[in-house]
Length: 144
Image 1 (cartoon, helix red, strand yellow):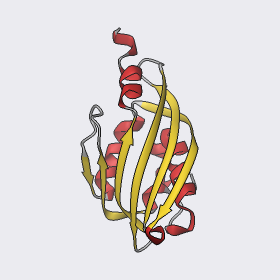
Image 2 (image 1 turned 120 degrees about the horizontal axis):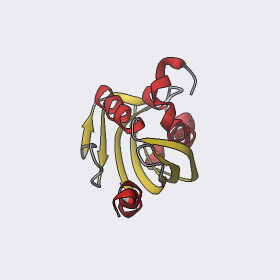
Image 3 (image 1 turned 30 degrees about the horizontal axis):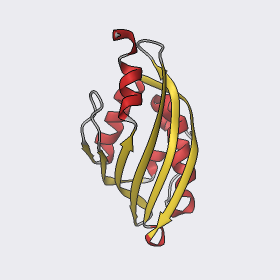
Image 4 (image 1 turned 90 degrees about the vertical axis):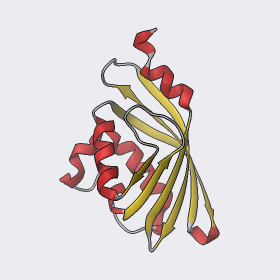
């Protein structure tokens, strides 16, 4: 993470760095929040506690991630596969994240596929798919 400007998001740094690596010179900015447009649409096609299906705008996205870091700390993000299409205006990334559910100490491992649309060297739309069962198992491990 290049500056203390985003220090509050340290718990998800591996994810942010993986996304930045995946997009390379297609976008401008050092940090994940620098490479999303002010009016980004971040869409998740799954149900995750306290996360809306659609987040509109960088400020709201930052607020959502602030809640995420209160609950999950990532140790790694890896297994990146990048597919560039449409002259780099659309990028599909596949990856995994590995972390810990802070409330329970349960390990959290998940797989994702994200479809990213880029305009004017910024992310304008993000559509996310994940292994919902992996998230469910990690979040409910203490309840079984």
